[in-house]
Image 1: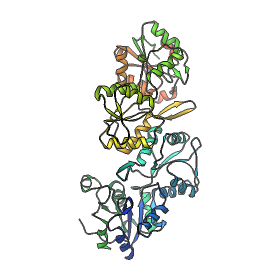
Image 2: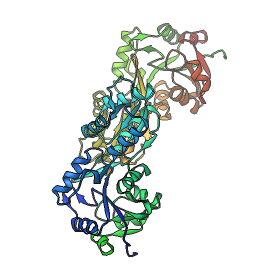
Image 3: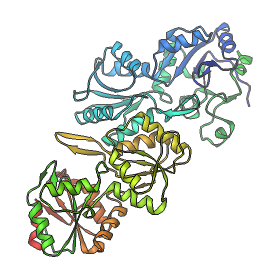
Image 4: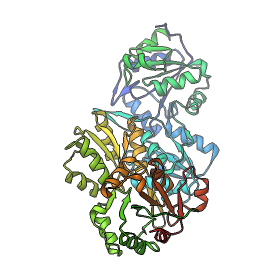
Length: 262
Length: 262
């Protein structure tokens, strides 16, 4: 494996990369501190739309990693920014949890109920997904609403296994409506990367994406011509890596390997 | 349009063909009586897995059409027969409503809960579908269960509109698991047609399928080399018919046109 050069900016995935559940992964704190001390820009990027940026920043601080809200980008924030630039104040029917609804309301959107006309149906990872929400999405699409989703992940790792993620909600709505989702803003979309780069004030070629998922973290980096480092502390093992068509520039046993190059 | 010849057997779709909601469609009773009086075999075929054959037979009797349970075939019955021949006594995790669960238990299957090992995940039109059922399906597939579904319909017409049907539940499970459903037993599957033909003791070429849906009723007939008559009392109008790649042998304004040929 090649030696890792220094970059001006570092985009860290969260779950499986910086922490796992409620514990920091080995070397996460020292590495992030070391990079910052060396003048590097650091942002955290999650595809999860089930919590706000504030709560991810709070969690990182509790774990000993000083973090401002502005240093955290997640898919609900990216979606609110994306729609805000294209359909400000739009009427949204939302399949999603409370923090997403709060984020969208704060961004000036109007959340509508089943039966009301909507401009967009927003589809997110939703552990309270049910038949009534599915029916609301169908009715909104029949009345002209377009489809947008937060993230393409099939499952979300949890203590002792995994649970269905946003791809399930997308499949349900597409199945009922025969309409494809137009935009999925989360990783690996360039939409999300552009929000990160704007936050750091850097270009893709100046940055390194570090994450544990080939099909989101590493794919986003590769498609943007950005360097990508896979860390083996999350969902991907060496066997999966060998078989994947998506290959990272670097493979890290843990984050400490980034410090050698700071 | 060609004059309709007489057939030995008639397979009638139910909703949109024989009745709509709780009212018989024009000519339904006289036509079915007339065909039976002329010695023709008649069966009723529905893709709906949300009621039992007994209750569809009861409904037809209440509407004035004498019907035995054996004259009604629906997708939950076909699924129970299909699995019964291949995996007798199998362990099933079911996304479906109570009548389907009852039908499967009567057929000797064991219904398992989320977390238990299952041989198959059965996916059906389910107005009580929720995140817990979706999670149970994911866990069953991860432990080796195969996927089978009752029917491919996207939506089900109801008073004043439509609601999500089985394709939504299929999309959700396929989205979470990245696994395709192996078999969908309902129309237009040959599996369903074979159950109807066995019930009548006739071959496909001796029968006419009458229904209001091109992509299920008429497609099933065409693929089996059987005659198909589209009746315009349900979801399909002449404009949709003109644009469809699936074309029936006959088009009926209502069922009475069948009697001319009895």
